[in-house]
Length: 270
Image (tube, rainbow, N blue to C red; front, side, top):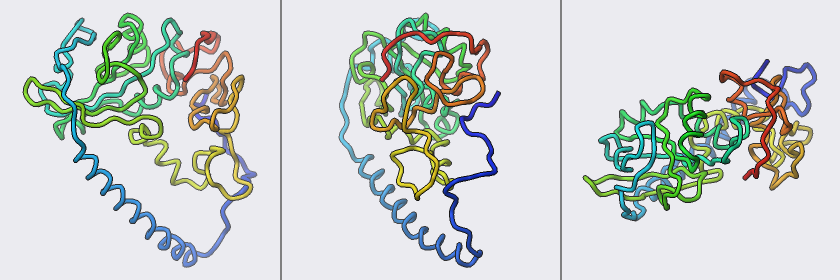
């Protein structure tokens, strides 16, 4: 069993043109000018992000974790800054029925040791009931701290699928930043590496040369919605990208009990 939808092939369509090293180096240096400009603009945006105003809220609001209800301020673990990922939840769905996009986001933050070293804590929040969440966290083998925010208002609870940043000043808590959609890609190193490869992500929305393979245009059993950027994060036991009854988010195939005979629960996907 593999955990990738692609297989090696001796017939690769849409390959880049073959040139000598000097020609490649010249093209590479030309692109590097644009890459550096992109980096500098990203630095400028990050500087503006650090200057955003912030919103105070009640940091004593309770969330539920392994030790039961705790005040949100506890999630800072004594540090000044906190980043959370707000994980979507489908009540009553089997493990393989949980959100594929949220799964890949959480999977790419296995722990927060480097964040912790810079004075930043990390946690995953979800709207699911704690009993279901605890079983899922055990199944996935997650080491991040998870908490249920069921019934809690924004910015701690509310709509899921966001990365949110908070600042603590003693017993006061503040919302400083929030992003969703493709803003969540910042934690997904796999997408960044795919963007460096000759075939990229294989998505239909990408600007690719004629003949490049595309795998992201259609989801089995579902219409393409803006040519979804995450449909192939589901696969069957053999690593084939699918949205069928034996599929699950790709990282779940490495978890205990991930057998292909389990059927996917019916629920609404985002």
